[in-house]
Image 1: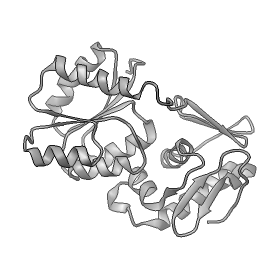
Image 2 (image 1 turned 180 degrees about the vertical axis):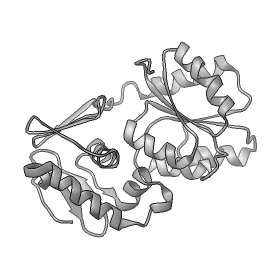
Image 3 (image 1 turned 30 degrees about the vertical axis):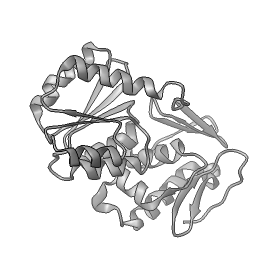
Length: 235
């Protein structure tokens, strides 16, 4: 059950961390979303667009540094690393890779909440992520995870929606094959461009008359055009 507050993605493979952080975050007015692997974290970050990520570095499938680099390929979400790794080199590498803060385990609850508030405050004053994108007859509601074309609902699979939502959050900008594949399918599929061709084809079919908004950038990736920028098709 969600609490309706800012969504915080908690990435850690230790069940006790989730059992500890969940009630703590809920009591502070946040809505925790758990992930236990790096691939799951990247998928949820693309699909749910959390307000902040708490990231452990010691994950079973990917190193947290790799997850951080993957996140930064498509998102500017604030990331606070929570790790038992206390070497200066680890901290420097995480911060250089795009982390906003680094907190060592074990941590003080009050200090962690203060750092979360500080990271979220730092995003205030920058343009907040829109809850809905509307362009050329396509409407993507990021809160309810709904898509409409010409005011008619479009039924998408989870991966189709994740792909469209990621493109919509970057409307007008090219999102590379690697960024899309890493976010939606995980780093193990970062080179499987054929996956994208299949899913982009499915999306275009479901978008119907608005399919021209989903533009191919040959050899690079895809772009969801903003209304008024023209349209192009092709796989």
